[in-house]
Length: 107
Image (cartoon, rainbow, N blue to C red; front, side):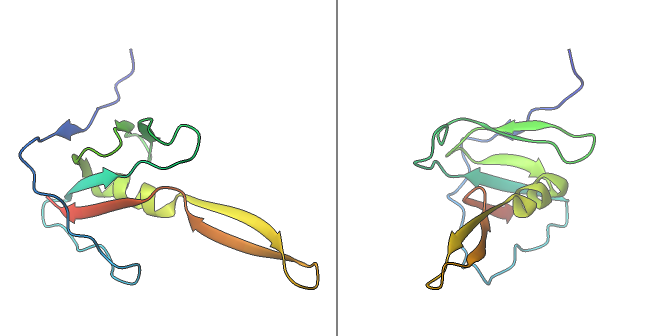
């Protein structure tokens, strides 16, 4: 078996505050965050998300608040999908978007 650690789930957690795209995630004094990764309509959009920043590896269930480290939050912020779509002249235009819709609040 691997030495990976699964995040803990706290059923008594309040719903995280929604943040706007321009609002940065607040720093946590403890280095821990409550993260909720929301389901999507994509294939596998209800499956748990595997995040492995460095030596730490966790599966985060969708739509369930979980306590994770700051490194996991950084991994989620850095997960970006890039696609190319033609503009009006037919030239490809790069479009980047977050891979996962999620919220993170200091624990």
